[in-house]
Amino acid sequence: MNKHESKKSLGPRYAYDGLDRVIHERARLSLLTSLATHARGLSFGELKQLCALTDGNLNRHLQVLEEAKLVSITKSTDQSRPQTSSRITALGRKRYFEYLAVLEQVLTDAGAAAEAELDHQGPTRSLTA
Amino acid sequence: MNKHESKKSLGPRYAYDGLDRVIHERARLSLLTSLATHARGLSFGELKQLCALTDGNLNRHLQVLEEAKLVSITKSTDQSRPQTSSRITALGRKRYFEYLAVLEQVLTDAGAAAEAELDHQGPTRSLTA
Image 1 (cartoon, chains in turn red, yellow):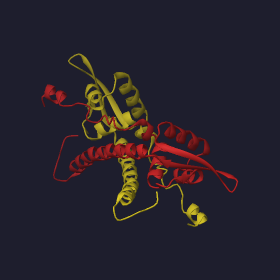
Image 2 (cartoon, chains in turn yellow, brown):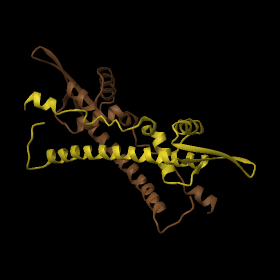
Image 3 (tube, helix red, strand yellow):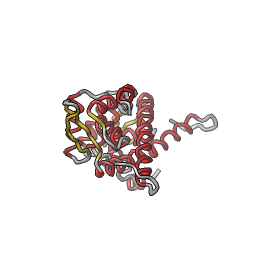
Image 4 (cartoon, helix red, strand yellow):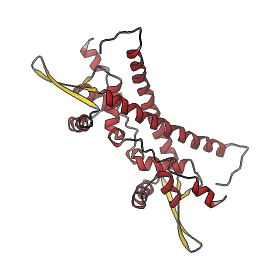
């Protein structure tokens, strides 16, 4: 293999700049997926269950998402009990779907690795490890 | 809608426990994808280019992956220049593919959100927002 040629063609092939840190964090990805699939919004209790988060973590991550304008939070009172309802915003939905496109790219790239592994294990081929 | 029924059926539907924090971090996901697709290993310089990382970040994240036994690092001397070569381990490959299965689940769940959105925008249906 020509070393120079190989180096020139590299580029940031697997950098995944589009994996936005605000969305990529696991708890927030979990929250945004819950809210994207429930466009009418979810209560604090429902999000807690769906995402298996503690009150503290849920509050903290919802706040990050609200500050980034990806989620809107409304506080109201239902039968004298305070109710918090969160909804994904139009911007949140846009950014979430852009993020998902990058996840798809990761899976496509990884598919090449899976195929290489199958080739490697195949009975008719004998590659040096 | 019956509130109790709805609450009982929730569960941690979108918790994604399988999104292993060691792998999920963007730079490390980038490194593991590079190494999974290059089973013979990659040099420090190649990884730097493929993942668009600084020397410091590359060193730091490679160390985390090595400590977790997902990557093995060999140091050698090539024409009197030090060479670092990294390879994904068998454990690393196993954990990486397990992680990818969870990513696929996120995309499947998100697909439901995309369909709901299409329904919502459809000309023949008029749902209240």
